[in-house]
Length: 183
Image (cartoon, rainbow, N blue to C red; front, side, top):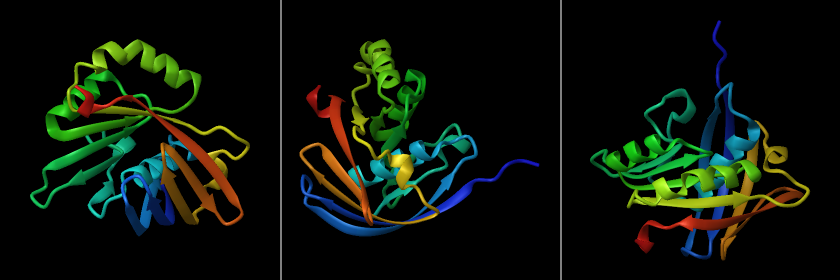
């Protein structure tokens, strides 16, 4: 018998001071059996960083031809394709052919640094690609905040995200490694 996804519910309140975006989102996340709680929480963090009423979680890990998150217009065209982790350059080139903008959020400390150093030259050739590294320093890991039912608050300002849940909080620092607009 195949393992099933674990369903998580999150009420996410986003206050993005950089974009002047303030909204509450009721989200359902399916954590694939092979996905860690940390990766699922980074997907949630990526949602907060790009929060929009049209942004949705896609099949991601369970389907090879869908991203972790995407924003589609009313015609179904993909406006933004968002990947979390350390995707292959071929996947990102294919995504750039299907979406107007592609964003990658690598995380994982040293592994993410190695991935960037090995792929930076090839990724710079993808005009619509933005790469934003996520680092979560401090005692509270994002995985520690994962619960089947969550009420979270994300405050975003100057490349930092404070994600809090009750008496727990974690700060994530984002660093733009590659911006599509810079080319």
